[in-house]
Image 1 (tube, rainbow, N blue to C red):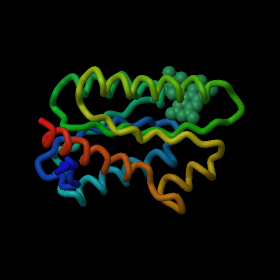
Image 2 (image 1 turned 60 degrees about the vertical axis):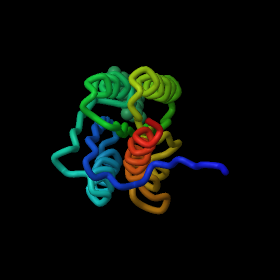
Image 3 (image 1 turned 135 degrees about the horizontal axis):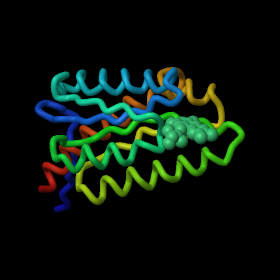
Length: 155
Ligand code: RBF
């Protein structure tokens, strides 16, 4: 008989850290308020949510790693908005953020949800932060709750 283990979406008692990048904050703020709203609607206490603001997506991994290493959080949510523009920076920053967030999670053993959106245009970023393509901050918050609860089941 097979057995499937899953994390539920009940946030009661969970302590959640959020790392949010200020760059492109017109869209980033939507992701942050969406993530907080999703956490609270899934019964995470507002007092159990701690937000660390960083300048841009490049800085997210270090802050996420430090929060994870503190062992004060059951999961961490990383939020950033990267818009391609005309420069090579997009690829460089996106690569560092992605690799760094993954490494922070694997090295700390703390689930870290990836809520960094990468788009070609501002319009696409607006679509992913609360309009026609949903809000990726909300999705990352739910992934954090699910993974925190899955790890409890696996343990
Ligand atoms: N940070 C973001 O979170 N999103 C961006 O779209 C973004 N674009 C950048 C473009 C350039 C040319 C530079 C120099 C930085 C950009 N950053 C962006 C900021 C970056 O993540 C970091 O905060 C700064 O480079 C300071 O270390």
